[in-house]
Length: 423
Ligand code: ADP
Image 1 (cartoon, rainbow, N blue to C red):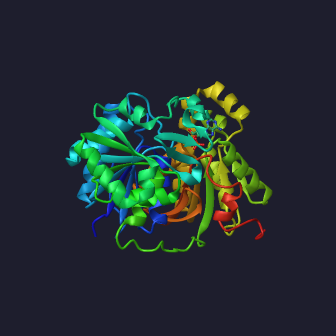
Image 2 (image 1 turned 90 degrees about the vertical axis):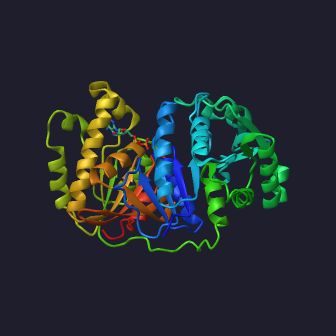
Image 3 (image 1 turned 120 degrees about the vertical axis):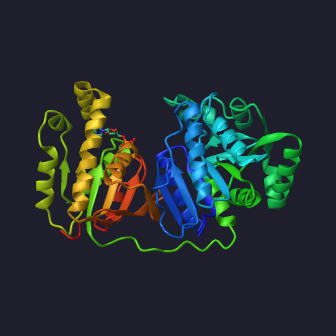
């Protein structure tokens, strides 16, 4: 069965976020890690596939070529429409990569116009009169103005996008969106006749995004955050209701944590408080040549197989600073990722069938180590944190990949079906 819709996400966490949005809209959705090739297999009968790249902050030329490769692959899988997913805070610089990638996707598709909307109302991102708000603040007044890679000092999306493309950019305002799908479609036609190539659309609520989704079903390229993707998903003809596939309860369960984000540290504390077994991985010892993986596996083998376990390198800001001072940031990260990747492989070989991974980079290291190229997206445990299903050499695996700051404090225990009561 050909795909209904293909999606290119400009970072890994954004890929999970948008894949969860398509699934909420009832589409059977696959998430593909990195640029796919002829050997990358999709789960059967998918409606949507999301290719998660790391192209947000790379040089624009590289982002363009990787995105075009992904578009060709999605077309080969039958996708008539390609959704370009970027951050709901429009993370980019005057060099791109939003404008250059969108232009390249449009050129390749021979398309005249595209619609952009980064609104994500559940996360407080709304667009009004073309200005992007983060809760009650303009983007340019929000903490995002200090972002280390892409400081966002302007909130006017038409102006921001105009700096990234040589083509004309215009606005479809909220009054038009409120008039409904036909009004938006008419506005798109009128803008295209005027030589506009990128249209930014206002959206304040999920209803607005549903209107926009319905209006851009026929466009070969559409761009925005997860909210518009969900709007398109809901507007897809014959979209089946979201299937309530069961949250996995069988098989050994483990958490591997490499994120040092505040929320992950809280989740680790919650896991300890539930009295569940956990092991801290000593990065400095690993760097000094100690057999940290072997010791961790001996510890794992001694645990009650009915209870979830946690293995973590995650460190408080002070511990992290100390490790980084000794090893250097890049070397420390490489050690941690190597350690957690190796552990993931051994744990799955030892029968772990439910694996929760905390940390964006850490998730990349674990999927690479396990040789997982694509997963099927399942039910969300928390917003933007779905269970996924993967096939590995050792067997089927339910995998949850979470960005450091995602999920409630009790996510680990709740998702793994143990709040410690089985002690
Ligand atoms: P997040 O999603 O919270 O940003 P990531 O996994 O993307 O989490 O990033 C966390 C980074 O911190 C990883 O590169 C990881 O290797 C590194 N790291 C984790 N624990 C330690 C530690 N104890 N010492 C040094 N670096 C660490």
